[in-house]
Image 1 (tube, rainbow, N blue to C red):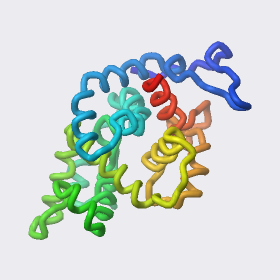
Image 2 (cartoon, one colour; image 1 turned 180 degrees about the vertical axis):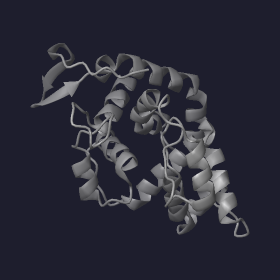
Image 3 (cartoon, rainbow, N blue to C red; image 1 turned 45 degrees about the vertical axis):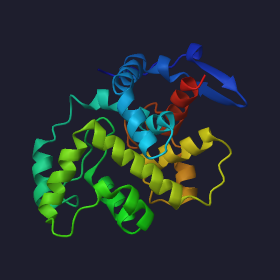
Amino acid sequence: MKIILIISAFFLISFSGGVIKYYDKLFPEDYSAALNFININSSKFKSISLKYKHNPGFTTAIVFPEIMRYSVLQDFIETSALEIAYTNYGSSVADFSIGRFQMKPSFIESLEHEINKNDSLSAIFSEIIFKSNISELEKRKTRLQHLQTINWQIIYLNAFIAICDKRFKELDFESTTDKLLFYATAYNAGFYNKPNAIRIKATQAYFPYGPKYKGTQYVYGDIATYYYTKLNK
């Protein structure tokens, strides 16, 4: 499935001095495919998110742009060789996006690190923590196995939200949408960044082809908030 970039005044309107982009019109096939995937897996999103006391709609919105992008990239990425390289040598040698949420092994390693150093997170997400007698090779194999299942991806996503809740607890968000814009940007650009850096990145348009692409691009967090707003109408 290909994303067709359609630039049309019909799809854009001015609002409060800015511009609202109708992403379901700009990316009709990919937006629809993402909605379909979420609908099929809605019970998983709901049950796992509620288990960790997170709003399922908020949780889903963070990765909605990635679910859209997956339909663009899935025919072009061959991960078998990279999986072998990661298993044997780690993320410093092979780090690549896996699954619908486009999570990387290094991202999971960062989640594990944050969980391990916080007692309350360790208790909540005990299933993510490896026992001390597990070898690094086995840990890497297990991470890859987890990343290939939707349930585990949702668990990791909820761990990310819990980590952000603690990491950015001093921030005062104007609304749930403002918080979502920040969290979605942190998910896409790196939650280890400082708040000001994440705020800046939240204004930068590099979706869906990345920062090196010179053509028309869009803001990752805007797509997440657009989906969330439509979901809650």
